[in-house]
Amino acid sequence: ATPTSIMVGTGRAAENGILFKGGEHLERTHALDTIVLDKTGTITKGQPEVTDFTGDKEALQLLASAEKGSEHPLAEAVVAYATEKGIDFLEADRFRAIPGHGIEAEISGKSILVGNRKLMNEYDIEIADAEKQAENLETAGKTAMFVAVDGTFRGIVAVADTVKETAAEAIRQLKEQGLEVIMLTGDNERTAKAIAKQVGIGQVIAQVLPEEKADKVKELQLQGKKVAMVGDGINDAPALAVADIGIAIGTGTEVAIEAADVTILGGELLLIPKAINISHATMKNIR
Ligand code: ADP
Ligand code: MG
Image 1 (tube, protein in one colour):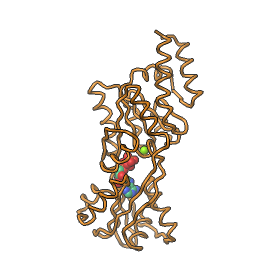
Image 2 (image 1 turned 60 degrees about the horizontal axis):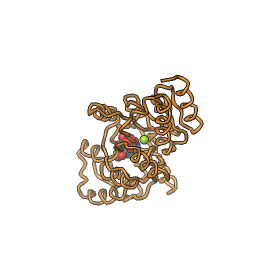
Image 3 (image 1 turned 90 degrees about the vertical axis):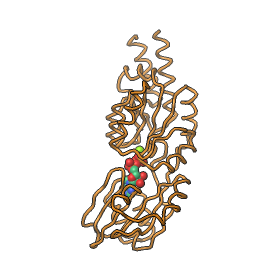
Image 4 (image 1 turned 135 degrees about the horizontal axis):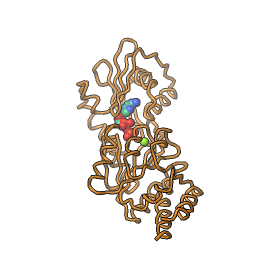
């Protein structure tokens, strides 16, 4: 490999908004056969909004006050929704985020839980009556979160995030380039599949805990695949580091950008097939 042609390649990539940390990453991009994409903030815009809430005003007040302690995009959506509804926020006496599950808080002597089925199961909250409703929301591509107060189910809050305008076209191009495309997410399977369908992804690995994302990438590598991971979040960082090529979304967290080999500016997914084209063109010049 001539250093000059690699420099030309990374320069051309940079002009397009694809920032390689070094020439060796451009060389390795050439060998990729699998691309794993995080859902929230990578395929979707990462600005979820509340679309449905089935509980009463007190439940909303407790739920939103509890979510105020969380930095999760889902929490921000809930806080914005409650603010819009004119809810007075209460001070939480205790708050705990449970990664991949939800949150737990104590407010005005009441214990609040907000999160997914796993969280409700762990605290033995009876949600059977709400299951059908949750499934309908999820089939529509929404993330349904269950709310419990003092051990009793009090409502579902559903949040939806829109997919990026160019996501489907980027994925079409990646497939045309011969890559296997997989979605990897902490969200539930039904929601994940609905979003995947919108952008033309057939393979979904869902309900993955933040600390398990890197393991999923390693499993694919053990099958002999050369894997690129694309992500934006703190919870994607270990997977970005483990992947053959880690691709960070430029609008994502600093932690993800640091762990990755490449950053795509503005989170424009079309830059991924573009990077692959540039790597192919560069390697062709070398041989
Ligand atoms: P993602 O891969 O989409 O970033 P996470 O691993 O962060 O997802 O979260 C997985 C799931 O855990 C969410 O879909 C949600 O059901 C639940 N969850 C996480 N954080 C919160 C929160 N602050 N409030 C309610 N639910 C949450
Ligand atoms: Mg994300």
